[in-house]
Amino acid sequence: MRLLPVSRRASSSGLVFFCGEAAALLLFITGVSLLYVTRTVGLTFAVVCFDLFAIALLILSWRRFHGGLHPCWLFLLAITFFQGGALFGYLFGDTSNPFSITLMWITPFDVPERYRAETLLCIALSMLCVYLPCGYRAREERYRAEFSLSIRKITLSMFYLFLPFEAYKIWTYIRFIQAHGGYAANLLLNADLLSSVGLPIRLLSLVCTCAFYNILLMETRTLRLRYVYASYLGVMLLSLGIGDRGGVLTLLVMIWYVHKFKRHTRFNFLPLIIVGSAGALLAAFIGYTRSNETIASLSILHFITGQGVSMQVTELAIAQRHFFAPHAWSYLIHGSRLFAGQQPAGSLFNDDVSGYLSNVRVTEGLGTGSSYIAEAFLLGGIPGVVLVSVCIGFLLRGLYSLSERKYGLALTIVLLPELIFLPRAEILSPLSRGLQYGCGMLAVGIVSLVLVRYLRLMHGSTAAGRLQKGEATT
Image (cartoon, rainbow, N blue to C red; front, side):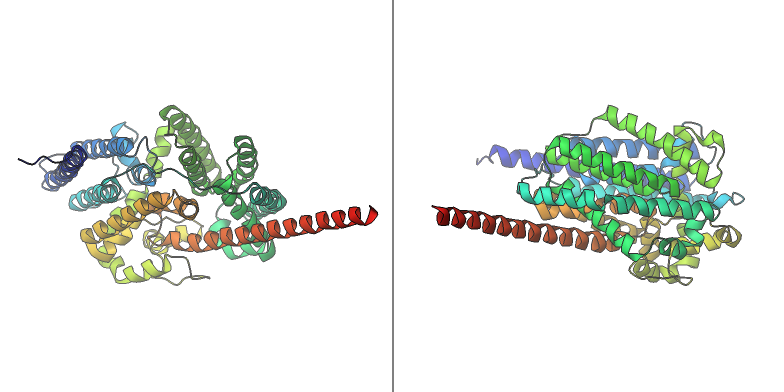
């Protein structure tokens, strides 16, 4: 009898365990959905089962991805937060009906129970289908790229040179919004808001951001990184003044992940809980100041429940698929944000959902986000959700595998903030950001390299001139 090598036996047993794990999770969530839609079990049982499913998947991915050091773990955490927040709020008594449609402060209404069950199934299937491509034979990657000291110094100088333009841009936006009635001006007068700064300032601030991303990619000196983090985040926190909670949150998560990945250290639960709690309270306060929410919303649990409203967008897409599905391909194409200017009806899913719920609220400057799960369901039902989620899983796996190289980690830096935000954004929303900041990072890198070569050439010619002068003197 011929025995397999130990490594192959371990690999086979690991594969069997992984397949069993995936099958058990799939059967569990499918069975719960069927029991709920047939009214064999109640709402509380279904919600508790989903919460247990999400927690189990987060724990499994934490262990498989070496302490959460993988974009997939962050993505699963984002789905749990943005799509399942209300379900956890229901579990802890913060809301009595997590499926009630309350978007844009309209009169709440409910959808039939079969659509609720389908919503739970779509979210859970998406989480599982994102996890499977990443978790299959997952291995640890280490960042090995190195950069010369001269190009790091040049990039650092460019960052500090253009940082005032970033601060000026954000401060101008804050003043414009305050002068035009508050946060609603961000939506109603977006073109005027952008023109209040001007294209040159926006381009110079883009140089600052791309230089910061290059520093995040290249710099290894801890003290220098602390100064850069403090400077840039100090400026970007001003964005909370214009209500950009999501942008600041995803930026912080991306910086934290890249910092940990370069040093190959896992996330620690205690700092995550402390920073998450502080961020939740701050974001709840910003929500109060921008949207006149009640002071009672300044609690962590209520904030988590409120962020779970993206599930309502998914719920509406499932319940009203006949209304939105004719525009599904238009939502996909225009969701890339590559088309400038005001988009007509039928172009963006979040705009159509807002108009469907309340045109009056839209004229007041209110709106909703989108959801990649909702757009995927409009494209192809549950199979569409599975296909899109599997593609996202392979993308996250590819980003992690390539992150050991400089270009792979640069791509992660550019795309990760938008990928984390996909549970409340369009499927192709990372595309425009990838092109904008990817080209910007490349341009800043080329300019830095040219300046390094020029300075070396000047230094060489100066040294040669001094040498010739010394020879002439002797």
